[in-house]
Image (tube, rainbow, N blue to C red; front, top):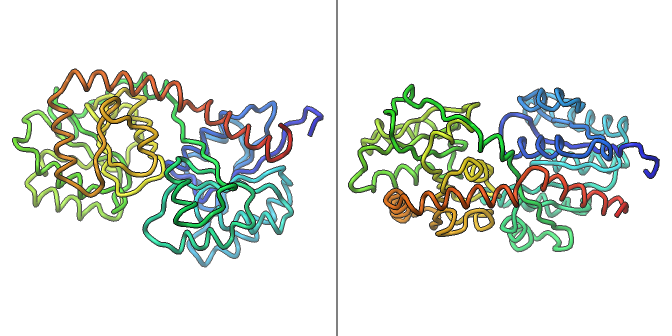
Length: 372
């Protein structure tokens, strides 16, 4: 490894469709120093959006087209075979299924160290945590995206403290800071409106039902305020019905999954995050990079991003009245809103740039490979 030849690494992830973990892996791989590292990416699922992004940057990508649980034995065999072929110096896995299959395949293929990525404090099912704990003897280090996830992993899941390290998510600051505002009139939002944007998968974790209830509590509801909900998911129809029930269907606009998030953020007034739990939400980093103040629930990772009364306001999860009060407070204080916008961009640029994250991972890899 001292010959000047780049060190081969394998990054294994469940899928490469647009999402927080997928974006984080892509940013990490693209920002690694190619003179030092030779990254390869293995995706367990079908070929997704980020596969092309990586290949354009000349990163080899293998997609194994997993189609549900019945295909896992085939995928596990293929993954083991691919690791034996590549013989990387280290494997880094992301997301639950890749974490699980990756650690066993690495053991069979003789690949070590194994680095596992922990991206969320999983509150839905304790089984994820139990499986993670029972198989963590195969892992050399777990990278947590926030101190909140690290605390949850140690206290609730029961992972060893010495196997936990925190490396926060990152954001391409220039991409969001320099985006041109989108035209929102096609969504039925009048020109000149103040737009409160929320982005995420439409499912219980993200708390969009709480957001709709909070919007219904705005009294009086400002004439120029509209909510823009970006994303799709299993709760889409339920949430639309809830907005209609609250007679807010002309003020809350569901626009589905979008590829122009930087432009949508640039056209918005603030970001509202109503999640019940998180890891470190990329959307908050992106909004801060775009210069938006943030109203967010006090979930995992938020304390490291949103500084209350400095870059935005934080509230308790599942409290629509509290969320409505914070939204109204920010809407009624343009001086604080401008100050929060400036502070948000400043903090993200200094602490959460993509190069900072890549340097942190590279330092960890050198330490595990005994190069530093």
